[in-house]
Length: 385
Ligand SMILES: NC(=O)c1ccc[n+]([C@@H]2O[C@H](COP(=O)([O-])OP(=O)(O)OC[C@H]3O[C@@H](n4cnc5c(N)ncnc54)[C@H](O)[C@@H]3O)[C@@H](O)[C@H]2O)c1
Image 1: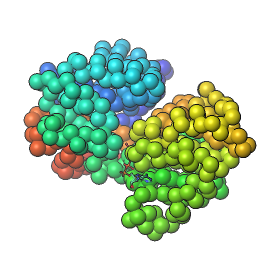
Image 2: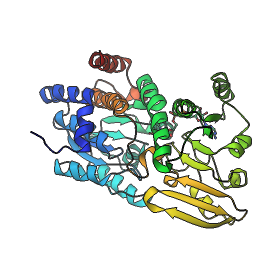
Image 3: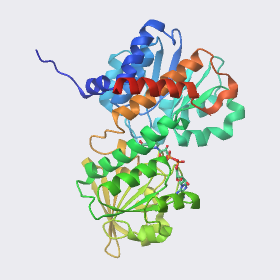
Image 4: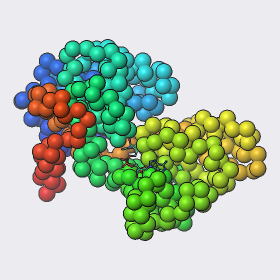
């Protein structure tokens, strides 16, 4: 007998940790009577996360992040009876309305990705908010100055060592590499690749391109980190030289304005630019597109590539409009299932801890508790053995 199965089924069946956790939650129901508001990329892996929370008894009110919402995922979640406020959009105003709609439902717990939901909840506070989780580096950076005002448990998944090495180092590197090939169908061999940012994501990205026979340069503002890159065997030229030399230029810093219109004169003819950082502001694409030296722009709509033709004859290519390349363009796959299965299991265990009042307001913007890291690591290893 054969049956039609979808990508969502494939991903769900590949998330073995979440499946195991969901089976436990069907018995224990840690979220019974609670509403969880989520603001995280709506793509097939998220379905497995949301299904696990629902197995634990939660009512779910969901939205995604800018530009990464996959309509098939939204349709699927709605068919499962979840409330979803989301459209596939690059318009920050439209996206903000979806975020506001989630918070307006007064969720008891928030699962945030980039600090958007907690920032809105701070502007429009309500009594039943217990706390929740934040997924990213960028969200932690944004919420940290608001710590005193938030004063509720918010566990930062990014700061788990598991998230750092499983997702940021290994998976982001692999998926940005996969994205470069998926967008362009070009080779990596012998290409001069410059990676901006040698944090966890940058380390994996630099390693993946080196393993694919590229000559990789690293740029970072922290001299200690640059030394590490140097000792890891990467070229560490000065910033402007690294831009001048790049056939492929990748930003993955978590900070805005890493490559701006001022750098346009430095960029080589034929260079390909892509971003892996959370927000689409690391490469100032808007300033590039409107620069007076740009004579014309070819838009490869279906492939999400823009080619800028400069007045001096150079052509410069930008992938995915500067949005996270691994969640943009044709058939975006995002990070590997295994890395997300681990990260999302940290998510559900942390939300469970907050739901059970196992942490208090002192745990505002703190890493995942070490016992949760140990529990999730052991569970993964048990399945791998
Ligand atoms: N694409 C994805 O799937 C994905 C997944 C996880 C994280 N992220 C995002 O990737 C970004 C980086 O995450 P991370 O965990 O590697 O962060 P990190 O803090 O570990 O590393 C960032 C690095 O960038 C460097 N940096 C800062 N400003 C710089 C500048 N002007 N020029 C050069 N280097 C600079 C820092 O010194 C640091 O070494 C964040 O925005 C994060 O949210 C993306």
